[in-house]
Image 1 (cartoon, one colour):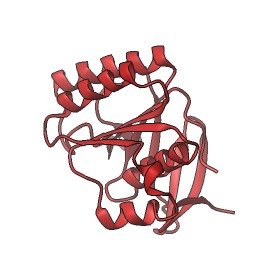
Image 2 (image 1 turned 180 degrees about the horizontal axis):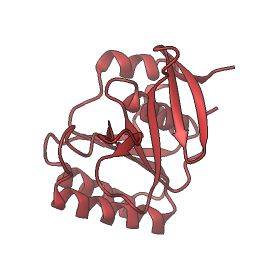
Image 3 (image 1 turned 45 degrees about the vertical axis):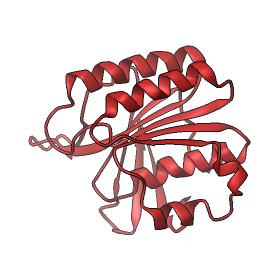
Length: 189
């Protein structure tokens, strides 16, 4: 249903269009398969949204969701993720949500820590998603990603220009349209 994560993905998202939800949907998929997921974020995901996304998942399964809400200490959360990758064998996804500020450049220390985490995930063969706010190029050249994660594939998620309830996920040369529901993203038919 969702595109496969090719190792490392930098998901750049138009504000408020579902980047965290997409990440949670990938996490739910991995948890339902019996695996562990590491999730680093500034703030806890919205409680109502989290409940909607995990309503069909047992509490025993959700206990394998290792969430660290670290405030502005993203580097501390990233270090924790690296440590967990060394301690647990069955981690099948690492997500760092909102890893950059919504404006300006990524902090050098955060960018360095992200590259260390990407290296660790790559060596451990664990898929990785970094979620950040996208911005439109001032020269009109389309969407741009904040922060340089050159080791990752850039994906862009934004609202459809034809229908504000639709979302477009841009993967290299491919665009997939989705409908966003309480359960997450459903491919448009």
